[in-house]
Length: 213
Image (cartoon, rainbow, N blue to C red; front, top):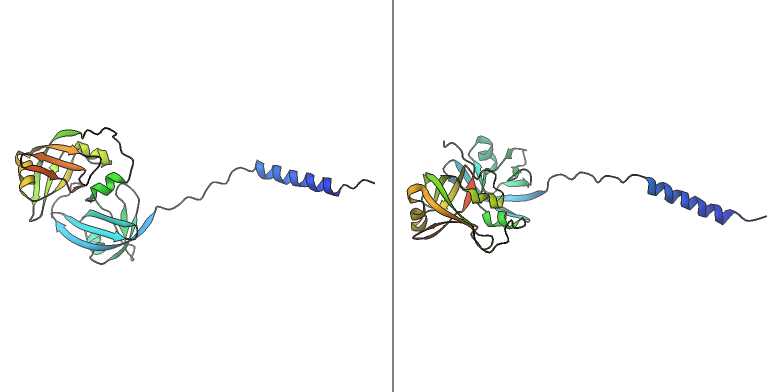
């Protein structure tokens, strides 16, 4: 009598492999938005905004937040937060589940460099921009207008936005008359500049318009 044990075992193995191959692929589990631990290292007030720096093991960004009740409770010097990468600018949550969403960003270089460049040309694009001054502080100035080159970093409100400028002679001259030449640079420390006769005025950040208190 023939011994069928090895042949039956091999046939059974082929059937198991065939069934396994016929199974539909298992969809990977949906991952939650990436989160980073952060501490509020600096907070200042500029017009209707809270100017805050978030620092952590995987995060070092400076944002503008509205001066709302929720954000005033969350954005405090030394506060421990979670930064969630959701939406355009993300969101922060404290230990009591209170949430505050930024309305602007001052880390323009980091924002530019986090994604592939949209332009390969070495020529820095320029456009004429118009704006009016909203706020003048000791160190910073807020102007509101159309800044179309902000689309280069995928800023969502380029046609009506607030630009944050440093106070000083170069920026004072560049914003005189409410018109200037805006330049975008794909490399280097300053992605956006307003050009004037007294020199270049770096744009430090962009923010969505808010009504002042």
